[in-house]
Length: 136
Image 1: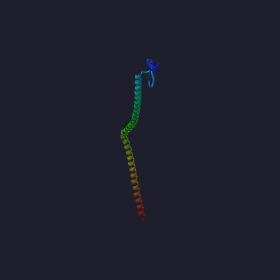
Image 2: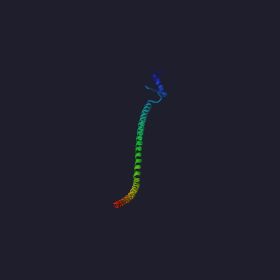
Image 3: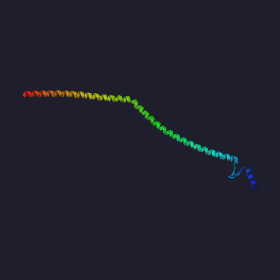
Image 4: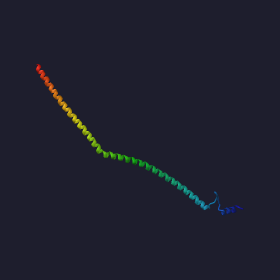
């Protein structure tokens, strides 16, 4: 049996020989299979790249959402302070008015005490004057 007959016998059995070795798949299907394998590898690489981009995008969006949430809470806090400001001012006004009233009452008390002391002083001077005139 020569090599041509052996090749024909292998062909008949469904085995194909080429420079890469023996194959059960016909050469056209082998080429298509290799091309499909290469396309699958490219698809997997593109899918991996896409997943990385999506992960980066999700990471950026999560960090942005944290910044937005922080600013939202800050804005709510400022809004609450603004809405409470009239009440705070009213309370402060009441406190200041109470302090003014206390100071006025103290002023009246001190003025009355001053007037009383001025009268006592005048009476004592008059008494001293009278006593000094009587001795002379």
